[in-house]
Length: 275
Ligand SMILES: NC(=O)C1=CN([C@@H]2O[C@H](COP(=O)(O)OP(=O)(O)OC[C@H]3O[C@@H](n4cnc5c(N)ncnc54)[C@H](OP(=O)(O)O)[C@@H]3O)[C@@H](O)[C@H]2O)C=CC1
Ligand SMILES: C[C@H](CCC(=O)O)[C@H]1CC[C@H]2[C@@H]3C(=O)C[C@@H]4C[C@H](O)CC[C@]4(C)[C@H]3CC[C@]12C
Image (cartoon, rainbow, N blue to C red; front, side, top):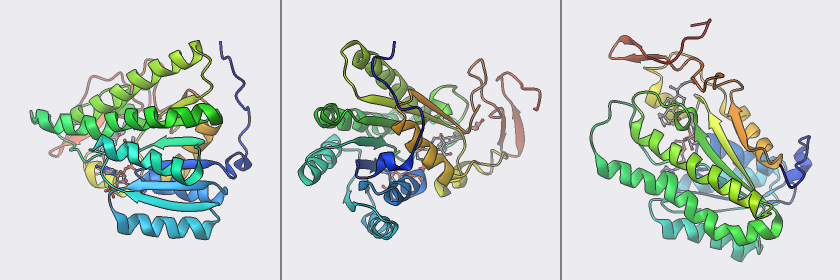
């Protein structure tokens, strides 16, 4: 039973004056989320490692009409930095309405190479920093009855080949945040948790990594970013974007078509009529 009422319809006014942190906002989907939020009149705090890119994002956010825009640069490999970003929001705004956890560390798209240290580092960046930011932000989010938005992937729901370390970190997010959501409901904590299950999106980094192997057209990052904000504001438990990306049995819609070294691999995902 949903103990609190979630709004039924999205209206961009919902974000006006809201205090929002967006991680991984120097490029890709995170950057687009910052621009949408700015246009909607939110206060935005963006973070990533590359200061020069963040500076530009902040300038564009101001042009688009953000209530305020600032950045903190650093690496989420270090959980102390993750906590510092939330403290910055507290010191600047005295509270927080929405925490959008979106960044990912670099990984590879290929057979698992046996590197355990890479998985440890990726877990620090893609998973533990999300937990650390949530823990630090929770008192403020309880106060504002705010939103936690966790950006994940179909690779965090339906594993395919060539993304074992990345997929592991995304499954960890589902396990942790979906469990935490149950606890919030039991304890009447009115903080929503939205897990975003994304298919292939046309960001520069993703296309560079997989366009040789995946021939389906990626979905647009601008629309994806808006859908993430919308589902967070509507306090939805999960977003699946593009719509229907996971079939009824949790299978991928078109992920079975993956090329490797000029060969089309035949994978064991259930086939769809269109395949
Ligand atoms: N694009 C896609 O096809 C899909 C994306 N997703 C998910 O969407 C989200 C965004 O993906 P996308 O926009 O493609 O990613 P990008 O690679 O475009 O952006 C990643 C962001 O994370 C930042 N980042 C990288 N390493 C670190 C680090 N160590 N510490 C802090 N920040 C870091 C990058 O900035 P900098 O280098 O400056 O630090 C950048 O701002 C991710 O959670 C991803 O898993 C899910 C499914 C598909
Ligand atoms: C193979 C998947 C396509 C299945 C579908 O039906 O859409 C891709 C969907 C999500 C992709 C991965 C992802 O989550 C982003 C990572 C980002 C990195 O920058 C590059 C590789 C990714 C592991 C990427 C690989 C393809 C997908 C799993």
